[in-house]
Image 1: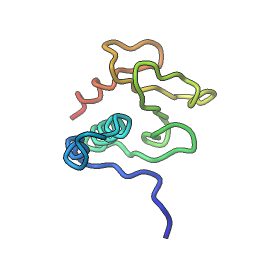
Image 2: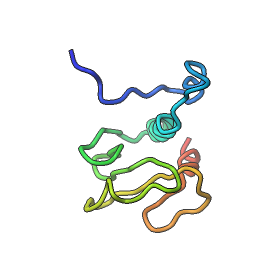
Image 3: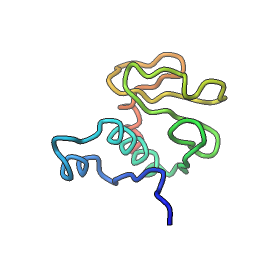
Image 4: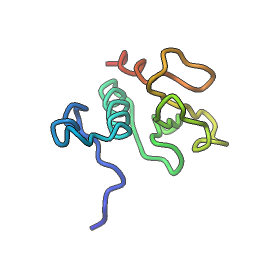
Length: 102
C-alpha cells in the first residue's frame, strides 16, 4: 500500500465539518475546482507539474490572488485558477468562474 497523492472531499463544507478551526484553504480551493469540473463532465488527472490536468491537455494550478506562474512555467495551455480575484488577466482565471459550470 502507498499513500495517495491527494484526497478530495465531494463537498467543500465537509472540510469545516471535520475540523472547523483548521480547514486548509488550499485544499478547499482544490476540492471546489475538481468538484465543479467533474460535475460538468471533464476528465481530471494529477499531472507531474501543476495541480490538475483537465481532458489530458489543460494544466491548472490552484491558488490565491498572489499565486505566480512559477509552478507551471514552460507548460503550454497552463492556467492559474485564483481565489480572491474578481477579474482575470492573461492565463489567470478567477476561481469563482468555475462555479458557473455546475
